[in-house]
Structures are given as structure tokens and as C-alpha cells.
Figure 1: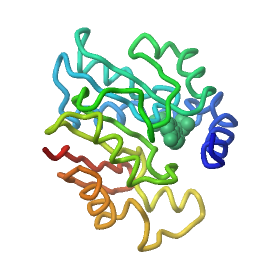
Figure 2: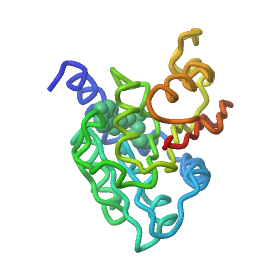
Figure 3: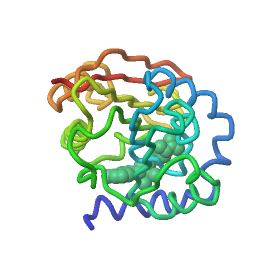
Length: 199
Ligand SMILES: C[S@@+](CC[C@H](N)C(=O)[O-])C[C@H]1O[C@@H](n2cnc3c(N)ncnc32)[C@H](O)[C@@H]1O
């Protein structure tokens, strides 16, 4: 386990028990973001860095009973909270690192990732790993229920031009990792970048 992973696990273990109660009104925003991913009944989708599984219920609703929903996260305490919330009814939960997913290449139709990429030590490599598991033409949603400016204000910091999620930076990183960015929204109540896996 790398120092980066230990840090992430410590950070989220401390927050797991009250994660959902800190953000009780986010449900509709997650449902709307999942809707924009364009899933169809029977699709196979990964929630990368699923945490307490807040997206698993709308993901299951989108793919229906014949679809496959997998939630992967590095922090056992977040996955335990997901089970306590009953979210394991909507998807399979896996203790896994998005830098090396135990998933066959091109086996998924889409990846949903909320609040994940800012926590990744090597985001370009990790986005490439997400591209590996998705079929050509499959989709990626990088979502956050708060925009970059509002999040920075909440955290008492400034956004700098080298911010990973700034549109030109993210577009270039996705392009170098096997994805083509198809839309980008960054407003106070929504950050959502959508991309398609290149052939
Ligand atoms: C900000 S939380 C978001 C959780 C959830 N997606 C949500 O929207 O509520 C980020 C999550 O990413 C997980 N995470 C961070 N790095 C990871 C990695 N390399 N592999 C898998 N999960 C990771 C953390 O454990 C944490 O649960």
C-alpha cells in the first residue's frame, strides 16, 4: 500500500460514518448526472470511487435488473457504510484501486466517478485504466455535486490555472488517456464532464 493510498484511506475512514448525513440533499443531483451518462437497460457500469454508494441506486435504476452495477473503492470504511445503507442491494461492492482494476478490458459500457479524480495521485494513468475497462464508444462521467469555484470557496482556497479539472487541462488529460471529452459543465451546483472512449 503506497503512502498516497494510506493517506486517502485515513482521510475517508475518518469521514465514512457521517458522509451521507453531511450531504443529505445531493440525491437529485446524482440522479441527474447518472441520467446524462446515457445508460441503457442491460448495460454494465462501474462506479469508480463509489464511497458510500450514493450513485448506486440511480445507476441500478438506469441499467435495470439485467444490467451490472459495480462499485469499487479503496477505503473499507466507506464500503462498510455503503452496506449499512443497504446500497449493496443495487450493486456489487469491491475493495479495489482504480489504478489496477480487477476487471477485464473493454468489458464495461460506462464508468461513473463522483468526487474521485482530485484524490488520485496519478490521474492521467488512472483515467487510462478506466479507459481500459470500457468498450470503445463507452462513456465516462466525472461528476461532483458542487462546482469548482464553490468547492474552493468552501475549502478556503483559490482555483489556480493548473487545476486538474479546468476545462482545457481536463480535455487534454482525457485525450491523452483514451477519452474524448464531449461536454463540460462547471457551475455552482454541478461539475460534470462527459467523455467517450476512443476506438
Ligand atoms: C470524495 S469521495 C466520493 C465518494 C462517492 N463517489 C460520492 O460521490 O459520495 C472519494 C472516494 O474515492 C475513493 N478513492 C480515492 N482514491 C481511490 C482509488 N485509487 N481507488 C479507488 N477508490 C479511491 C475514496 O476512498 C473515497 O471513497
